[in-house]
Length: 156
Image (cartoon, rainbow, N blue to C red; front, side):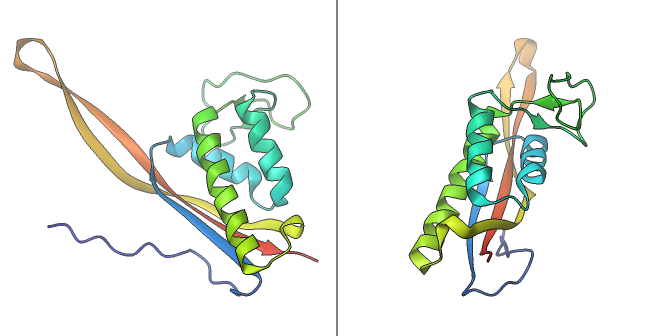
């Protein structure tokens, strides 16, 4: 039997002024999740939601700064040439942001004055599958998952 530890938040914050949300074992790319989280960290919540909706509609690219090898350039003055439209990861992170916003609303925080204090990704479990092939062989078909944690705080 495998014992799983409790996944804790990376930073400790004042619970009266913050709201948190976490998504575990989300089947999206770790690289895409990292680049999106890096892009929206520190943004106001409404701006981040608008940014992710634009990424899903393929109107605005996510800048790929670390994982940018063989990534096509995007037009426009973005400050960095390489970018992509990771739609699946953007949908998953948008859902987590909406959960964090609902948690803030439940706590009585002003949802119009929220900003993303902390957002990070961690490696989740790898779902291992094998696809049978010819002559008795098998090809591995591994699916990676990601843990995402968000902390929103009220600014003045």
